[in-house]
Length: 595
Image (tube, rainbow, N blue to C red; front, side, top):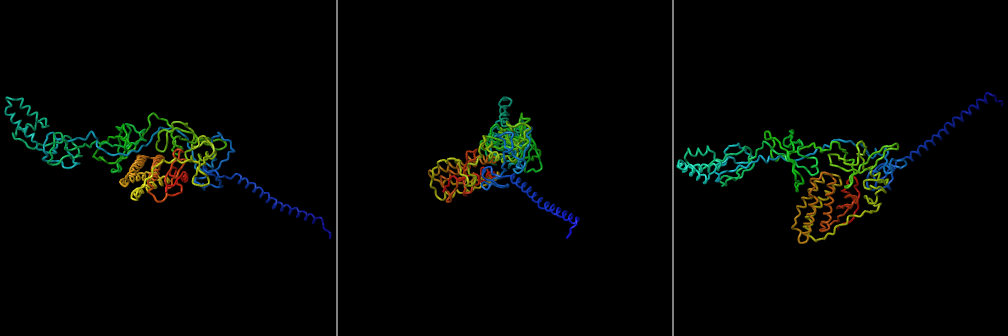
């Protein structure tokens, strides 16, 4: 069979076309697959690893909570980048966003703080008068019979019978008869009546009538409201004895309570705008005219006095008032102020994290600062920062956790070094190396069931107090602390006899001392400090009397009390930390059980 040349060319073209299509389909697909595999490998190599600042053995491929302590996981940063300072901690923009880290520029401003004050309306002490009788005698009539009644100057408010005044009138009549020969005796008789505050007109009226008056009127010396009635009809009063207390309420005082923490901001001459609950919609203003030089040892407050004009008698004594002072510190025109959220406070030290951007990302460097007075939502910085520097204002705990993990200077470890993971945060994976506070030696006593029952309300309220701190509830914690003080007062001390009585008195005194200033505290740190002392007292009380049939657990956090450690009582073995709340909820361990 003869094949022509044209047919051979067509067959060759068909073969070449088939080979080309096969290469495009299979060879290109293989190359693409290899490229995709290579890209996927790179993605795995660059995947973010998440870890816990307190338990660095935790490694996860996605964010979440630590399975041991429940804290938020943070990105594990590699240290391939060259940092500006070997002690700085680097964070990528993604890590900052996930950790909710935000920054702000430090600036200067005039420190002005809105100080809120509470107080009461009181009478102006300079306008309170005692209405006295200048004549001794018996009250025959009372023209003003109740407190609150208004009297005018010169108004007759009472009348009395005075044997001494009757005798003095008779002496005047006798002296008048020998006036021509004994003028000095006559004048002496008139002066005797004047000493009893009788006017010339009254004396002349007595002489004209020529008869002895048995009742004499008592007139008001001032105008005002009767705030106290001291006598009743028929009472015998001495010369100079007060019949009424009369107050002129045309001007009043507003006495505001100033807490110790606010005294640095309040001074004489400050303007105060205040309102009264019973007069909604009305606003008053005044000036602080006097500031107590001594603090009340019982309430721990000083009184700031504002004088107010009382038009229409709208301001009534004992009304509650709420005031605001826009206070400024003297000689502090340009002052550095930072938000409270930017400062990490350990009791003895205060630190912030300063941001230093570079070509390799963002870096944060811990810096110790010296705090000045608190002002609302911020602190004055006395030393440690300069205007224009950028600091972290949110997410500072996340930055500090990353610093601890990297072994760099942090709030709890200012010198740097290995991450602080030596104590238990609620799991059993890591043994504790912290030593709890050595318990005080307490003598135990045997008490009857009535005495034990009387103590149990203390524990109910104490546990509510603890749970409020666990939940970071400031108002509820103060409320339960106040209820605990009340519960201590209600314990019947007669149920404790002999040495047990002395022990109870000692324990109750300690607990009352710990709760003494709780109503005036404004921060969780202050309340938790009081709770620590209360817990020590409750633990000692429990060791003395063991009022529960079920066991009570003594739990311990080594990081509380400025890393000195602190204890608390719990009826459950589960750790719920009242000293740090949600920040480190399960940080702690059981150190003892009271059965």
